[in-house]
Length: 228
Image 1 (cartoon, rainbow, N blue to C red):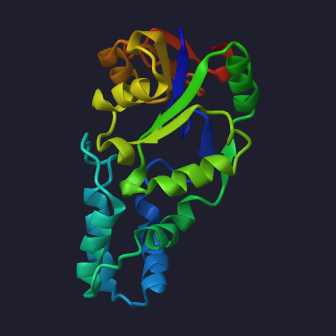
Image 2 (cartoon, rainbow, N blue to C red):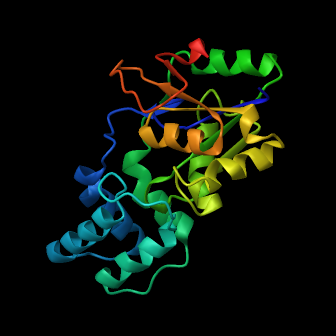
């Protein structure tokens, strides 16, 4: 093996107190966005915007093609009856603020990554982003944790244009790492992580911290990163 690649959220890090499905937080996120762009949406407008966000919620509607936050912002702006702002990053920072407040590494993450690097393994991340989150925010979040300097590459679904389990995701990562897919382990906590690894010919490792016992065809199951 030449490389170990990871999913990010709930594999290496977690946003404490934020559920996987963000639906309950839509109104507050929209309020932050509206304040940033200087509008005061009515309750019917907020409801219409929540419906748009539900359509892009991959916990409800699975998709493999990625969309940009700019595209979602354009739809929200039409409901707000304003022109779509050109400042995608600023708008995204306002919108995602409620979801990014309490990011932390799992206790064993840094030690496990350090051990892999000492073995001369390349270490990388491929992560799907929620609602087309810009890459800059993902990188900012990673750098804010103790593992910020631990990776040879960090690639997101925005970079590639596809989400897991589309094979283009890990193929892109292997190309950046200059290794064959068969020389890479992929570690994640969801079915799609196992599926994409198996489709691409990587070793599939499921991290099952709660020990649910899922069998999605993974090569190995671990409960702590140190088991790798």
